[in-house]
Amino acid sequence: MTLDAKPVITVLCAHADDRPPHLTPVEARAEVRYTDAAGLADAVQGAGALLLWDFFSTAVEDVWSQADALRWIHVAAAGVDKLLFDDLVESDVLLTNARGVFDRPIAEFALASILAQVKGLYESHDLQRERRWRHRETATINGTNALVVGTGAIGRETARLLTAVGMNVRGAGRTARSGDRDFGDVVASDELAAHVGWADHVVLATPLTDQTRGLVDGSVLAAMKPSAHLINIARGGVVDEPALIRALTGGEIAAASLDVFATEPLPADHPLWSLSGMVVTPHMAGDAAGWLDTLAQQFVDNAMRWLDGKQLFNVVDPRLGFVPAGPQEEAT
Image (cartoon, rainbow, N blue to C red; front, side, top):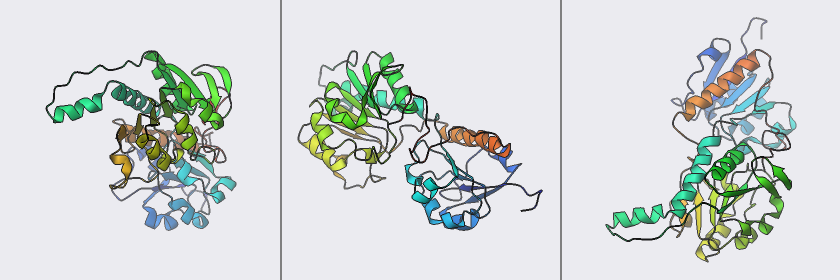
């Protein structure tokens, strides 16, 4: 590269029409190469930075040997579990994510899931389709208990919102502690089975790491109240899906609202589609209107910092799988 050559930033898109908006300021200062997975091996050569706009792609590992100048990868998602292969974890390439974009929308989605279940809205919808007028009593969320598993930014926003509507909230994180500003008491995630029996609603908001994969297994589900409701806004791999199917079928828990799954899209013949008490949404909890614009602008802000030689924000610790925070804010 000559002294006056522009830095190279590669943008991985799902397809040709999937380019992020608002990158004009970056294009004025860098050579921006847009590619799909098929062209990534060529496009990443000589690139100092890589934007994973196709944020679920696993193509980076396949072309790692061609990434001869790479210093920074930005993932346009909160979770980075798809990217954490061994060579990247052991490298000195900086990794950043979209922390902060999805906190409030996902928290609202969790609250909506709780309200819909408690107020019988799904049953009302089914009765409406049948043109059946059937009066029922519903419950209230005021004074009920919510255990939020994951005490990072999304978990904290969820805790604040659930507290605001009158719910009692605790957290589950890497270490047990008391006096947390958002959760009050935080229990240890690796002792989850000992604590879920307190909760009417268990909200999963943890990143997928080696420590959280399969965290909600048969023992945790068996320890929940028969009336309990499980909400997963994290990653599908946090839940043992066969165990969840058994728990719902056997009446160990009453309901589950899942926005994420081990296999996405969820196969049409998967039993989770039709289980009683089960609500399926297609990984959309954080995708409030304008989210793509926000994601793109967040990358632009960080890219300008990178081009100016300034410290980046949202730097992920690849060994942990999330952005480290202070002692009051742990992600798992």
